[in-house]
Image (cartoon, rainbow, N blue to C red; front, side, top):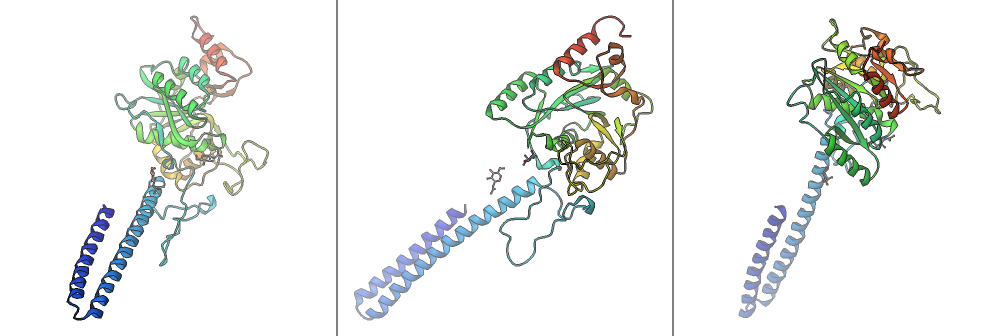
Length: 385
Ligand SMILES: *[C@@H]1O[C@H](CO)[C@@H](O)[C@H](O)[C@H]1NC(C)=O
Ligand SMILES: *[C@@H]1O[C@H](CO)[C@@H](O)[C@H](O)[C@H]1NC(C)=O
């Protein structure tokens, strides 16, 4: 559009130049004031050249302005934080300085907050799944893109029933980006078959699990607000869904501001650099985490995901996703609650025991095969105990 405008201007100047030119030739033919005519001709020529330079320079300037605005708009789309967002000095999140001064900044100041879920975008999504019927419970499973074996085992076991104790239960898998085009193509085919994959555009690594959790919260907040409860369940878990739904139906279990699981209190922050859970003081200065539910599986009322995403703007990212949720709870003035029967949230079992597995809600398992074996045995006819 501006190019067409600039072009029209150049044309106008050109025709003006021609007029001057013609007048100059007429004057020349009269031979009355040859010197004056030459002067006019040269003046016209200089004017024409000046106009050309002017118009091309405004065109250059407007196109780079477009780029500049585009970049700003792109950046604000990536980081929709309101400029003076809440800052907690202890988390080391820097306040955003308003860029002042006569000079336009060449590059806008970086405002990228790794744990703020809306810095990422869904590239595989199913916004429709909660529209037809709001589930009672949504099971969100963070899983690596390449781990199709874990997803298949879960689909055949605790995700198989869409309805438990008369309540709709929905299971979805959350993935980040990893692997090449081949992996993406396999995921696309897997999703065509099962319609249960969600994928966001962050790099899927262990140290990015907090991002994955927050993207799960963002999905629940924006695509499934009507669900009553949700849970984050790791992909290597045995989950007794029947007992979980039953637990959530227990009288006295809150419908809001509720988070439960295997609770951790007063856990020290790991400062040993060799550890998988090492967190440097720059990321989390305090010596101990607030109370949180162990990341293997925690359950929450579905009003919380929206609050987590909002409060995460003011909490610096660190790589321990369950403790990060604990920190979000703390900032919201909340604390995780003990489940009605704390003995139902179990971590490691010495061996499979049918009676035991029929009573618990969780156990951490070693492999997808172990899950398939345990499930098959648990579901066989006959009383488990
Ligand atoms: C803005 O973002 C879009 C898509 O995300 C991209 O195609 C475009 O090149 C970006 N523009 C600039 C000026 O960065
Ligand atoms: C986490 O994801 C971000 C966004 O994709 C990426 O830039 C970063 O390298 C990842 N961090 C790690 C430790 O993998």
